[in-house]
Image (cartoon, rainbow, N blue to C red; front, side, top):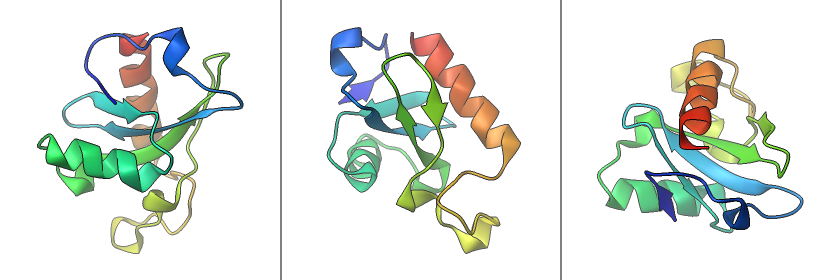
Length: 99
């Protein structure tokens, strides 16, 4: 489900909800089984793959930045964890705006 408005608590799952952020369009997709499914959903809506980053939202509102889609050697991200602090901060700002 693409979130352009507000994230509703009933859309967050236990123990966490997989999510993908489009850091350029400042929207997220949540609730898919895999991060890649959320990325596909956003691309069908007009997002560019290079702007998409995976993360997880916990019911208490905390985030982690771990997803297979984040492994991008060409973008200097060789880990499942987002290593670029600017991208992490951008995702935090997007989620905060949508809460």
